[in-house]
Length: 357
Ligand SMILES: *Cc1c(COP(=O)(O)O)cnc(C)c1O
Image 1 (tube, rainbow, N blue to C red):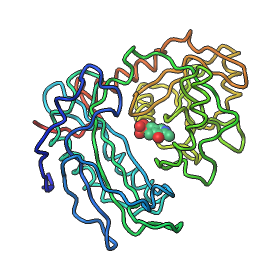
Image 2 (cartoon, helix red, strand yellow; image 1 turned 60 degrees about the vertical axis):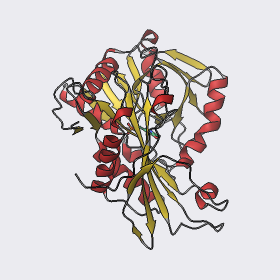
Image 3 (cartoon, rainbow, N blue to C red; image 1 turned 180 degrees about the vertical axis):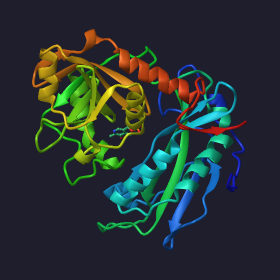
Image 4 (cartoon, rainbow, N blue to C red; image 1 turned 90 degrees about the vertical axis):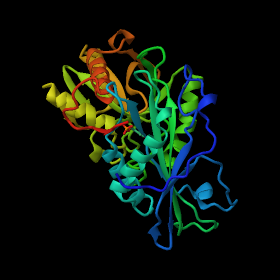
């Protein structure tokens, strides 16, 4: 393991955590990894105590949003130590987002080593129960202070972590989803393939409207056709129609390359399921439902792993999927992925980066 300079926190937040009500992103561990890009190169990063940061009112990221992030998890391994799930995928995607936002790339091995060291330093914050995890949130932002619209000369990488609950306290309750036919999160030539703040800012208004109308999230349509499906909330989306697993292709250019999406596709292929990465229209989904062929709909993402969709509402028409119950395949993917993450089953794909302690 690369030695990373570490300054231990003289105090701890551990005792202030309500471990039975972790929620998501509410508590933070004692340390962060910080690296700065100055004079045209990334300086040596360090692990330091979690602390407030000073900020200049002219911080360019506040004004123009030159910032990207990632999200991944570390899990308690049933036979000791911890597992970080597929961090290589996040390292690669961070650099894709970096290129999209004109941010200098970060060494992918160093990124993974920094995450390993941070998780080890804060290992007491990895929750004990199945489904719970230590959520790891890397972010990179332009750290220059100026008001002109241009890229920053300096950047900061921060990796922080947060003990989080199993996403669904009440089990895998299906979501009620509003298909957005008025608002879009991204467009062709936009930032949709990057994990960047702008896409989430663009989603807030529609998300709030959906909640006001009694839905939990929005299904996003591709902006030119307003028919092809992009994603659901901040998750990728999958459909099971007539025994075939269908998900929109990354080549659509308007969706994020989810790690969970990739994981589910690989598992589905191994199970012998027919899988298609192809464009799919909301009109096709509604027609499949009418024909009695729409079996399952679910979202995929690190936070929830699998989120079944129980109801879709599109232009006032509502369809209920699988009796508003989690489908067989969704359940199977959820069980298989979470068992692997906790080391309960053999990690045949070498998806876990295991830490011994
Ligand atoms: C993070 C994210 C996903 C899911 O990606 P995972 O790597 O599976 O967590 C999907 N869509 C959007 C918009 C996202 O931000």
